[in-house]
Amino acid sequence: MDHLLYIAMSGAKENMNSVALRANNLANANTTGFKADMEQARAMQAFGEGLPSRVFAMTERPGQSFAAGPLQTTGRELDVAVAGDGWLAVESKDGSEAYTRSGSLQVSPEGLLQTGNGLNVLDDNGGPIFLPLPLEKMEINKDGTIFARLEGEPANGGAELQRIKTVLPDNGDLDKGLDGLFRRKDGQAEPPSAQVQLIAGALEGSNVNPVAEMTHLIDLQRRFETQLKMMNHAEENDKAHAQLLRIG
Image (cartoon, rainbow, N blue to C red; front, side, top):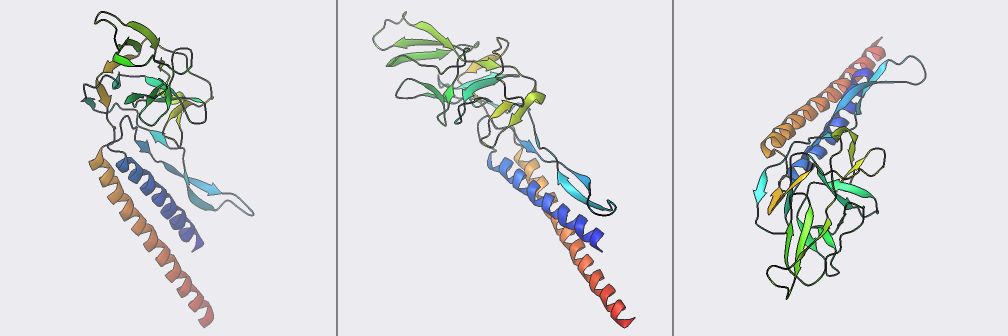
């Protein structure tokens, strides 16, 4: 009886984990540059005293879908989208270098080029990008080079400044953190790549498919109900077995 109960219990637990992951995907269906998470579980033998006769469901390391999201034209000079493969390099809150596809940028009061949630965008040398203020016009070229013109300068004025660091790592080398940013699994900084192209005045939307996520959630709910029924059956069988022993 405990075989059935153990499998059903661990399966129900993994279903709940999957529901939480799919619900998070659904909540980020409109988040710029978001990459959908994928859950995975496998059967694992429980080792301990005696023979390994018990099996339980164990969470595998989750992966992500690296498919590109839909391109949304905004016309805003500080919006950039990555064309094809590649990432923008940013400084995460813990000071480490991280990568994102969210190109909704802004300029802080101090002149720092930042993402929409306040993370510093890095240049090819791995340092923050400082822009002269006040700016009258700013453009981001497809190679990531920033062109800026100060207020009061002539229309034909302005100069090229730093270049946004863009990287092209192998997706298998990346790991997604709890902050939603990607980093190399070995903790090293990825070298800049000139192969990555940016599209100015556009943003990449989330690659989450809301219909598919809702379908997964319905399926997971039904699986969870099945696991609960199995646990109830295990309890009923255990009671019937105990009753037979009393009769005997």
